[in-house]
Image (cartoon, rainbow, N blue to C red):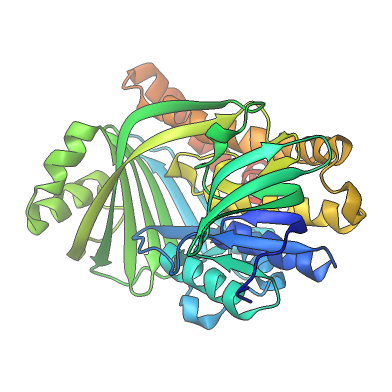
Length: 389
């Protein structure tokens, strides 16, 4: 519900109208809190990324009214993980977990558009076209300065939730962000297989960087991680040469490809905080942590941030939502899941990037062990679906 006049004070101000921000706003509004969502962009951004959403994330989005057939989701029934040049491989399946599917692939732009439309037409008050230029936090409230159509204005809130992707972290003097560049770029492209994908996703650890194939409609969405120099070279390849390069790295595990669409590339980095809470503020989603795409855990982790915070605040009186004890409880609830998933994703990059033959053999044995020990494999799959909670 777009508001024409901003309130002078709200209980909870949520900055960011993407999927994570919209989810926590919808949940807190339904719990009876005084909420204001703030989104600077009038329309959802164009974004070529594909999202691998776990079954648990799909259930979370459904509960928040953020799941619709318009997303055109493609089911992931199995995930095949392998390392090039070795026999090491494993397969994760929905049947082993007693689930209909492991998850779904959707376009980020479609999910972002659905989230923004839900905010525009739903019950949550939405300050659309307003950007936050300053956050001043005092003992009993926070003051937010907004720049909008009529100039700057200020409102106060008991609690500010940042779901803005990390744009405003620099305004917080009690939270420090650490950025770890991977010296890698990810190439994204839509690629058509010569045979139906049958709902199978692939993670392939090649010598020059990991590749992921996510089923999307009749095609795959390819995410190929490599050095910036390699990414530039492969961006310049002809379609035929690019397809041949991808096919060579899957070494017969995929039948082949017939077409590749437009290619995009972007740099990769790990961004973490020394704390996801500060005075009168909590950070969720990519504002709290930005991960490497290798395991497809970024948005899944962010949705669990939003769900955990919403569940906690649903039982907290409005005048206590921004208190230090409440925020400390949220930070403790999220520390295990966020810490383990972040460490796991980061360690995968370092574990599989070394060309050392001995280490390559050890990695192969690890995948074989995962494949042959059912409880270990199922435990790993559950963490991919539900997180480390």
